[in-house]
Length: 249
Ligand code: F6R
Image (cartoon, rainbow, N blue to C red):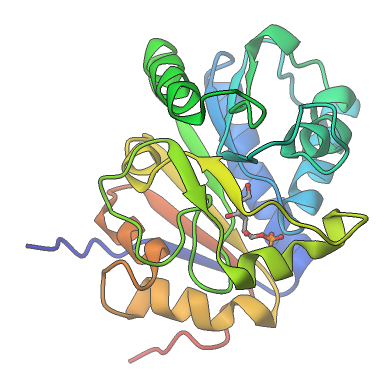
């Protein structure tokens, strides 16, 4: 039977204030526990969130020195130093700008010879770290979380996956030749749901339908983000555009 714990929904006027609200949750948690295990997402939505964290670090308001991070996903076949990799994104937007210890940063290795082995290694590394305390998420226009595309199993763990045509299209701009890898390695929905707390940031009109489906559609694999409603401590932080289709009654 599905449990339908209603997530906390925070709606802000614009993208900047939504990103700053999500960043504030991260900072509150890291101040409460300096060795926080933080799950990280990439993508356009997270850029202003990371900008806030970097600004707060520069202002001496937060330190990442003892934090441990695990990214959600990485493209298959890309080395960490490939400028289109999520590893490169993280260095550009966060890791190189704050006092995080490079030894405590974790991303799946998309260039691993055996992606199944790499996925198992990653799952074990999360477990060894004591699990994720706070997981940041974005949402795909098709409702994906991490790279768990529609159809994904709610108990799935970190594994290699195929990307949908729409996801590859949405991420074309990050590839100079327009050729987005067909596969990736991603934390599973089960892995994500094991985090103690989850914060999903959604901004812009392109996410409105997915946000509505996630919060008010049926819980099921057609919208992987809908499985988040099975989690006891999840917040959706949205700007007005992303929240535009939520109905109130
Ligand atoms: C990124 C990730 C994806 C993105 C989603 C939204 O690590 O796992 O689920 O969060 O595709 O991407 P943007 O923010 O670019 O719209």
